[in-house]
Length: 426
Image (cartoon, rainbow, N blue to C red):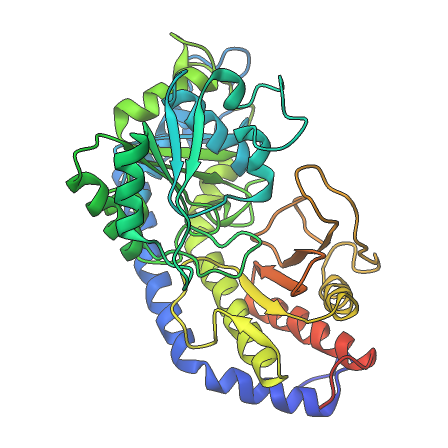
C-alpha cells in the first residue's frame, strides 16, 4: 500500500480486512445485480434513441420538451412500468408520494397502510399529528387513513391485510418498502409481489401504491413488475445516481400516472407543461449511473454491517442477509455512542468534513434528530450519510456511498471515533 492518509488503529485495520473478506460472496451477488440493472438501463437508453438533442433546455411553459418526454419513457422502461413522470420540480420523495396520493384519492376515500406506521415526516401529509388542522393534509380533504400493523417479526401480515381491506374498503393500499427510522426489515420485491397477489385476489379493486424510496436498483426487478400499480421516489436517492441535483418520480399504470400528472400541474395541463430549464442532462446522466452507484452503496452497507457486528454491535440487516434497500442500521446503545458514530461519518465526508453534527429539532419528528452528511447535493442520501432520531435503542441509519472505497473509509472513521472516545475496545 501507499502512504496512509488516515489514522486508524492497527487492530481496526486488521478487523476491517477480516470483515471485508467475510462478505466477498455478498459483494459478488451485488455485482451480478448491478450488471443486470446496468444492462437494463443501457437497453432503455438505446431503445428510446436518447440523443444530445434531448439535453437541450426549455423555458416558460415547456411545451414540446422532447428531452423531458423521452426521459419519462426511458425511466418507465427501466422500472418495468407503463408510464412515468420524472421531474426536477418534485422537491423530495415525500412530495412525489403526496402528489401521487392526492392524484389518486378523493374526498370520502380511505388510504390503508399495510406496513404499519409510515415515515415520521409523512404523518403531517396524512394529518395524524396535533396541530395538523387546515394545513392541506389528506385528512383536511376528507380522506380517511387506516393502517394494518406488521406481524411480530416485522413482516407483512397477509391475513390481517385482507381483513383490513374487507373492513375499510380502501381506494389505495399503501406499502412502504424501506424501514424508515425503524428496525423492521425492508420489503423485498418478492414480498411486495405476494402482497399484490393477495390484494388482487380479494374482491377489492384497490390501487396498490409503493413508496419505493431507497429501493430502486437494489434488486433485479421493481415493485411495478410484480403487481404494484404505481410507485414513487426521490432522485437524490438511488435513481439519481449521485448526479441528479434534485427531483422525484412517479411511475406505474398509464391511467394512474395521468391522474398524478393532473395533480402535479393542473387538470388539463398534466404532463404537457413544465420546462426542463437545462436539468435533463443531469437527470439522464444520473439514471444511467444509478445501477453502479447503488451497487457501491450496497457494498458500503454490507461492509458496515460486517465490521460493526465484529465490534459487538447489533446490526440489521446482518452481513449475509438479503437486502431490499440501501439502509444499514447499527444499534449503538447510548446517545453518546450514537453521536460519536455520526461524528466519525462526518469526518470522512468530502464536503464539510470539519463540521460537528449535533442533534436538533426537525419538522415532522417527535425526537431530536442527528444527521451526518457532507454531500455534493444537499440532503442526498445516495451519498454517504448517517442519521438517527435520538431515541432508544440509539440506532444510526447509514445509507449511500458514491463509491465503495470512500464509503469504507467513512465506516472505519465511525469505528475509530468510537474507539477514540472509549465507546468500544478492540
